[in-house]
Amino acid sequence: MSGNNIDTLIKMANQIGDFFVAMRDRNQSIDEFIGHLKRSWDPRMRKALMAHVDQHNGEGLSEFALEAVRSRKLI
Image (cartoon, rainbow, N blue to C red; front, side, top):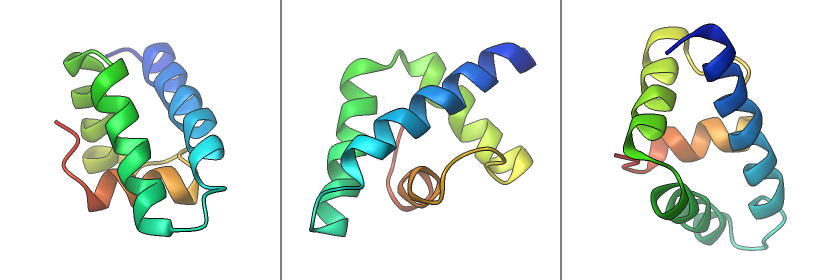
């Protein structure tokens, strides 16, 4: 995936994460975030985000989005 595309995915993941991080229960917020990505994102988008986390340590992702992606199965 090109740099521009991954930048867009990172921005989208952070925006989605900003919504779910406000929930009181951290585990539930992570589950809801991952569930949203699974329901709404094409598998190629999820794979590209996971590859970015693996290859670039999730650079650019918010703390919440990175924690969520690392802690739950996204693909």
